[in-house]
Length: 324
Image 1 (cartoon, rainbow, N blue to C red):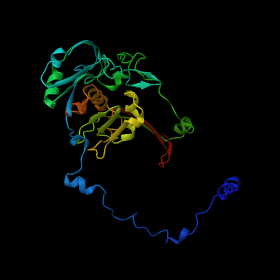
Image 2 (cartoon, one colour):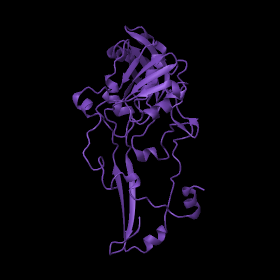
Image 3 (cartoon, rainbow, N blue to C red):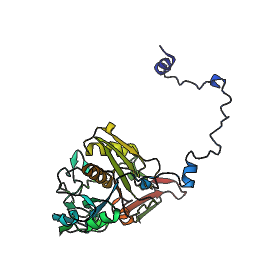
Image 4 (tube, rainbow, N blue to C red):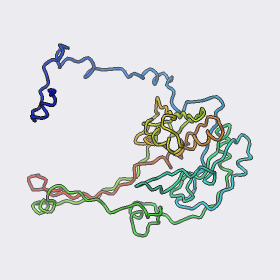
């Protein structure tokens, strides 16, 4: 039986050996507690660091995304013919393009929307996209796509969204279940023995991250292998989520993000702009770059939602807390 197994069997806790290997005193370190230069400090301060936004590839195209202007609407028809005929335009995709029914929001194995979902659940929802020779050509072409919408009812604050009259956003309702209550200890007894009980409701507004480098990606195919330069805080998360959306083995997808120009809670998962860039690049057989304008970063890249928090605290007059 090995020493570790003996300790485990006996229930004893092994002791840390004194100064193992004669490597010096435990309190002597050369790194912990000392000032160390960042390994990438020179690249950052000199401007030589290449962020995803800086990536320019030969024969590269630029993408632009058309977004729903309504808070809640349904797409009735799309006419992209004018956009397709504009100078420099190489590809146009919509929800009616074959292969665009890529599942998006999923819960318990059920997909509640698709990449270009005809049911637009917020202002800014993706409706179509264009790849063109220049960013301005792509943006102009996207604006020429004619979309007929059926506006639907909507609410604009969290109380109304949780109310009984809120419009249904998904087939299964609004995906709001009963609140989960977890208690530790006897809460009722704690409040009963309190001399003072204070209850307050606090609210925080929606907060939006605004990193210096906007959200975006560059996608390039080489045969059935895809390389994505992504402004992300987690290249492996993007790789893991993007590969099945494109029907790729994970080994055929490389995600590069040597530097990221800020995230602040965003850029932690694959974005629709990344999928759209990869789809346009596959259709055109050319690299495609999509970086969102600042307005779209505010509209569609997530946020810290508004909060309503009610706190009730019981205490004795000597300051001892009895229940929270």
